[in-house]
Length: 365
Image 1: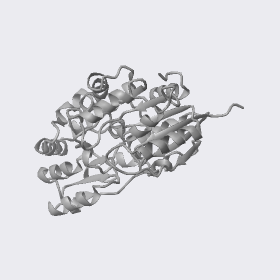
Image 2: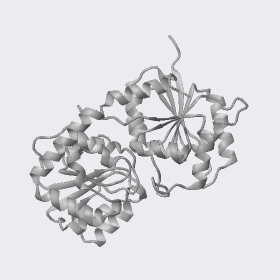
Image 3: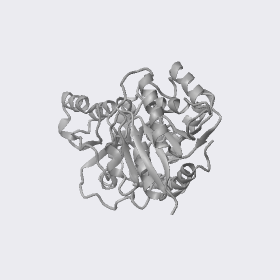
Image 4: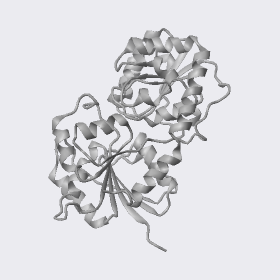
């Protein structure tokens, strides 16, 4: 029996989020691989999603700081030499030191490399690119295959970063797991969202829009996820006098049932690319209220377009909430159209097959 192909994955964090959930789905679907999983912050909370996928969690003990650290680079280079993976996969800007460490070789790179870029943190967006990061991406990713899940990010990688080996691989969703429900068990009108509680998600805007909509007391807002902004968000809800109508259930490992308890899904992010949670909501037959960032507007059905508002538009979000609250027929029509688009364009198997080709090495630069 042949030894499994070993892949070292370096994430900025392996806390639960879209890229981590996608990786877990792909790793469970493919046999014949051993996945070494390292996180720059040593947070491996998403390991709970891996089930029986062959994996090992690697502790890095990285020095924390805003600039490159020579000890981090040497530690990562040593890890590559010791583990001898067949492939290095890095994820987002937070893993850039692993990208650089792999280049510390007279051969150009220690092992073959693929970089996955899913989007930006709070200090970058599709309109704001930090010159230092642009220069480093251009220099250190120019000879690597770069995978992106959105057309917006594909254009940034080519036009701003100057990369030529960029491949668009859209996210996919299990439409047998995420599906609409005939009748909700709870009659209370519910606006819901699922995501890591990070600054760039701007859930504060969502809470303020909910307060401005005047629906508190007649509807509820559910924000499911864990993260650094939880206390700030609960404080905002309390100060606005709507805390009794806003729920924070924390991280939900299997959110399919949660989506079926929503009447509307909402995204208030400052920056996104191709949110997995958006596909899950669409597959669940939900209309979506969203800010117009990344590929969100093009991902949604044509019918859903009037519910997409400019980034930061609190009044627009509040108005869309009231519109959905008042019109059940509208919600039903948009939800049906959103699910139909997922069934046509974002099937899970297409994504699994694409990642299988990447992991096998058949599509590595």
